[in-house]
Image: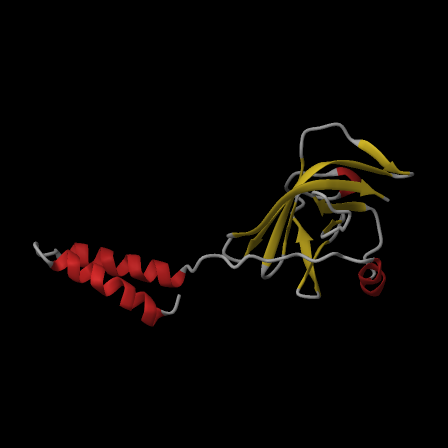
Amino acid sequence: MKLGSLITATLPLLALAACGEESTPAEDAADVAQVREIHDNPPPVPVDPERISYNDIEKNNLFGAGCGFAPANSLSVIALAQPENGYLKLKGEIIHLSPDKGGAELPMSSWQNYAGEKFAFELKQLPGEGEESGVESTSWPGALTITNAKDQTVYQAEGTLQCGA
């Protein structure tokens, strides 16, 4: 929301509040602080992670053991978690993230949390039996949460966590 429209929307409320009883300087400061909070912390802008294709893997040398996440009803991997790197694809660009090696570990020496300059993701292995899904891979129920630099959730989904070499 633009500041001008925010002020336009807030002024009638402040004027209405002014009718009837006078406000104290502390109440006025609280009102101003509330308007600034709304202005300084806009709602999160959702992201739509894209499929990380084999071409992306080849072009960016993303080969190696780790885990991939595909949302429910899809076989398209949208997040990769490897021992030393994590990856997302947003707006056609591969986003590199670093693992939080002090956090929870996933299979294949991958990690639950990865963070970058603008985004972070948390990949969870949900309760349930793992199922062999290839010669050297196993799949479990999983969940992916992506947050922005202000730690606001911008994407969340459940699906399949597949780990292998």
